[in-house]
Length: 264
Image (cartoon, rainbow, N blue to C red; front, side, top):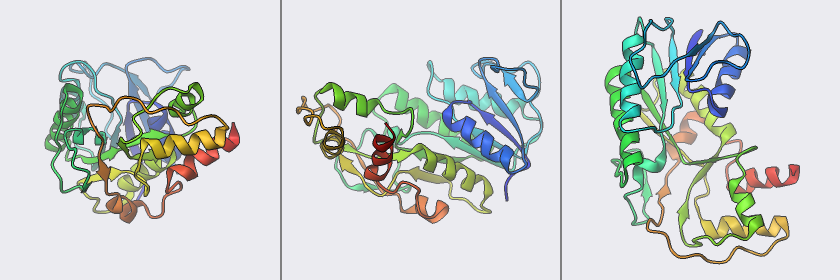
């Protein structure tokens, strides 16, 4: 069942699309981010969650949090300040994290939601800390998208056009922006969602496979092999995601990037 009153925290592309879908379904939506709205909006809250809020937030049925890591312990602090400012506990909170929490793995076996995070750097550790605080204080459902791509997210296409060297052997996972939005909406609506869901499509691939596909469609040389990176990437199992959201709109990178290239 779609929530009737939702707070979207972090109004980037994902948050904005979720907000629009909820409004189209007849829901009432508030948005919260540091900057003011581009136009007068009684349902926008401009505030900085790195500090305690000066006034309570509206009572809502659901919360969606799409915040990137910031300075120090920003995500954990944001979860604490958000929970303290909500007058009642929401019935559902979806906390959007990242599969970066697995950057410490390197053995290439498929990772499922049963595998524990293994952060290898401060930003990944901040993501893990934010997840833990969100579960403790908001009983959050955690969505960990892999590399998000889609219209306006064409950095890799531009790299291929520029002929920039890449690590061809690096394992990669990705998910189209549309499927991330669909997953968030599904996690808001289902009666008993999983605690953690990996947001990844059905086609994990090496970076070399992806850039070779892009180069072929762009009519440019395949980018040369760069020096191997320190981290070799992971392989993620997306079966649980598909059990929640059903068939993906873009099951493989060929589907998503193929559409993007056709529209260029």
